[in-house]
Image 1 (tube, rainbow, N blue to C red):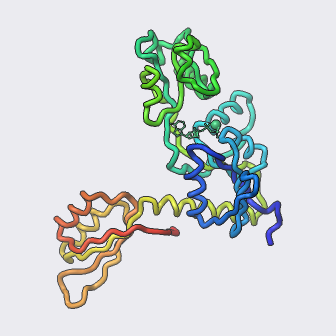
Image 2 (cartoon, rainbow, N blue to C red):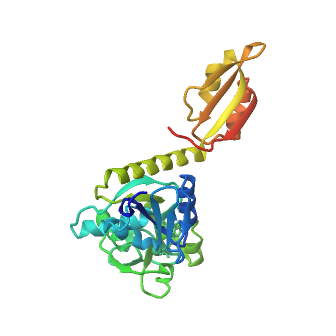
Image 3 (cartoon, rainbow, N blue to C red):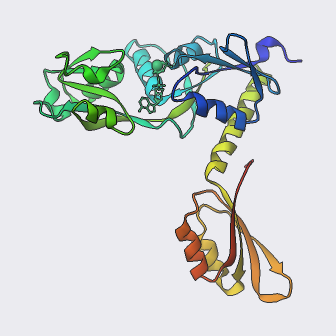
Length: 300
Ligand code: ATP
Ligand code: ZN
């Protein structure tokens, strides 16, 4: 049995936009867990890894303070926190181990449709409301714009109509919230997605080995999301053309077909999305019996 201290602790969002995806990612990495009675901890049954379910805003701090070894959180929160440390002249509290390609959103300015501010340049001498003061200040400073940053912890989009700000800077995914509040989306200052952050503290070898293993499994999970295994029959004469049509593939496996000298079977793993167009192009190049199947696991 592995000593308690040797168990990896990973912090994820307890309930919110990242929760389902994050738990699903850990499950896809092979983790089986049981939830504690208070629902705040998931105990790993088949790996020395426990899940802490917390508010997303607390995740960088838990990793920095070495309460958790890893955390899954939006890059928007990581960046805001990191800039806070930079401003205070402190050392980097964590590193980004992987980008996870879910929880996509952007941090953008929003301008009241009929207001005088319609771009960052117009913000000079005015007020911008945001929950991301460090990120916005850093951006304004780099643009050479002197504006007042008003910190809001929620409902930022109503700040202009309350007369508290001339513009906002907030997270957007579809843009409907801004539109509903008569705001026009302006410049984007950060493209965000969920990331996995890692403690800067050196881990005991056995623990580090499990962290490396988990990250390798995450790489595998991310690769198979898009990957497909493609099988087809192809004229030998068209092999080069057909291979060139396959997106993100390595050298194909070419197998003989019983009783056929002119055709072969081609099997290949494609690591990018296979579109109908690709299949149509394969057919035009002479391929037949094309079969596309999902890949369940992959270890590079
Ligand atoms: P918590 O209770 O954990 O503090 P929260 O309300 O701060 O939750 P959510 O709204 O669940 O957080 O968003 C979590 C993360 O999801 C954001 O930090 C961001 O990275 C990502 N996200 C993706 N799309 C959006 C969006 N349209 N608006 C806000 N966040 C989004
Ligand atoms: Zn939050």
